[in-house]
Amino acid sequence: QVPLVESGGGLVLAGGSLRLSCTASGRSFSIYARGWFRRAPGKEREFVAAISRYGDNTYYADSVKGRFTISRDNAKNTVYLQMDNVKPDDTAVYYCAASSALTTREPLYEDWGQGTQVTVSS
Image 1 (cartoon, rainbow, N blue to C red):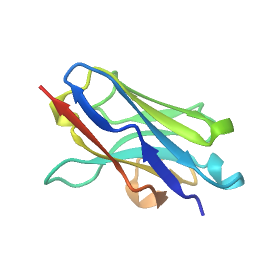
Image 2: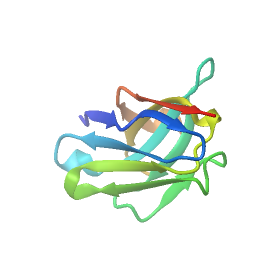
Image 3: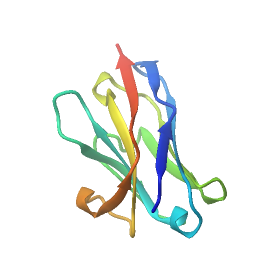
C-alpha cells in the first residue's frame, strides 16, 4: 500500500554527517507515521527514530538521541534521517517503515523499504 525507497547511505568518517531519505509513493497513504530502523552486522534490527504523520511528534532511541534528527516533507512524500556526529557503532543497514500511528514497536510497522547501507569508519 505504501512502497518505500531509502537512499542516501554511504561511507562517512566518525564524527561526520549523513542524511538518509525515504520516499513513499501513493497519495493518502503517504502521510502515515514513519520510522527508521537499523540492523548492524550480526545483530537484530533495532528502532532508531520515528515521526508522526504530520511531523509534530518524534521518538528516538537513546543510542542516537542528540545526534540524529528525523523530519519529513509531506509535499515530497519523504522522511529524512539527519545523522550527525556519527560513530562506528552506527554502521548498519537502515530501513524506513510506515505505521498507522507513531510508535517504536517494530511489529506495528506495516510497510518497509529495502534498506540503505551506512558505514562509519574511525
